[in-house]
Amino acid sequence: MKTAQRFSILAAVLALGLGAQSFGASAQEATKLSLTLKDHKFSPAEPTAPAGKPVVIELENQDKTPAEFESKALRVEKIVPGGGKITVQVRALPAGRYRFFDDYHESTTEGFLVTQ
Amino acid sequence: MLGALIIVFREVIEAGLIVGIVLAVTQGLPGSRLVIAAGVLAGIVGASLVAAFAGAIGEALAGIGQEVFNASILLIAVVMLTWHNVWMASHGRELAADVKRVGEAVRAGSRSIFALGIVCAVAVMREGSEVALFMYGLVAAGGSTMTELLIGSLLGLAAGVGVTALTYLGLAAIPQRRLFAVTTALISLLAAGLAAQAVLFLQQAGVLTMLSQTAWNTSAILSDTSLFGRVLHTLIGYSDQPSMLQVVVYAATLAVIVVLTKTVGSRRAPAVKARRAAAG
Image 1 (cartoon, helix red, strand yellow):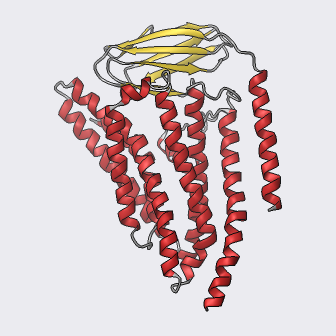
Image 2 (cartoon, rainbow over the protein chains, first blue to last red):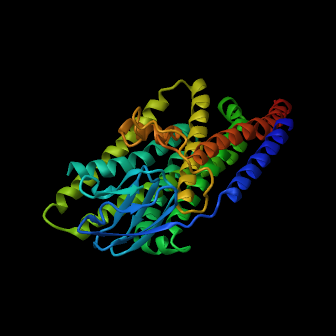
Image 3 (cartoon, rainbow over the protein chains, first blue to last red):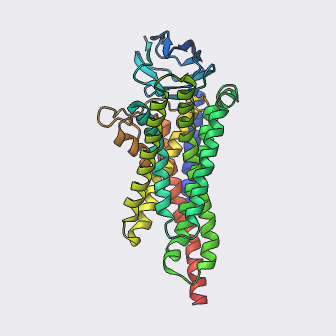
């Protein structure tokens, strides 16, 4: 019982700490980016965005087949059905070149988000 | 064809490993084979539904429906796995030893098996929906290579099922007295890994924004897209570039499971032992 009580207190403190952290973080304006997928090619293939600010990517799939928009570096994995549209939120990133791809056609369908 | 095989195989093994572990954990328990099979079947049906309604799910909740759905079913699996471990802590040893209490054990055990059946359904539905959509995409694209690609997909599926069998056989080879400890540990790590995955989806949805900085980057040492990396990813939740929040939730889930099995689990065990002695 004692261990459970101690753990509950620790968990509550941790939760408060995490909560306080998210309040403290400034609500930043996210950069909006529009991407299209057509004939299994992303357009633009190398979109740019300012570094250090969150990014919101809107992807429109103009192909009839579904795609899985994925990126390890951006931490994104989302299915976009044929003719569909999805929105993904990407955290603020340092300057760099981040690869994204269609998991269903990884070798041919890729792009890079360039932040600077 | 090889491309399609690999894509499908990668998705299927993630569910296959989990089903294999569940099969090993429930071996010898009456009715478990049927419940697990039902769970897998429910998962396949669920996967087809999710694939069919992918558009509607994606647009739900102002565009984050897909992430919330994925995170929710993963968290359901985490709860089921935790519940199973807590139950096993109080009844497991007793189940293994005491044939007389089979009646009570089967009744309580069937609830635990049901929980694991749900875990299988969740795992199959999660990965199955991606496979279903991929294969639907092949059919929708049509073309001369369609048959070849579909065959590749089915081969990938078969290979994934093979991994389930290997996992089960490998675990079933562990001696009985060790098996309990090994599977308890495996289930705890599995639950922590799934919880971290759920966090990833919620971060992607923008529902959780704290602690998003990358905790470490070990992709040069072991990439989680490599075959071994994926296996480790499913089994113990390994990630080569996790966010800080994922690490915290992973550790917290493990801590919660350990605490719950030690407090709730062991509190019930003495009462169960006392009843045994009295009936004795």
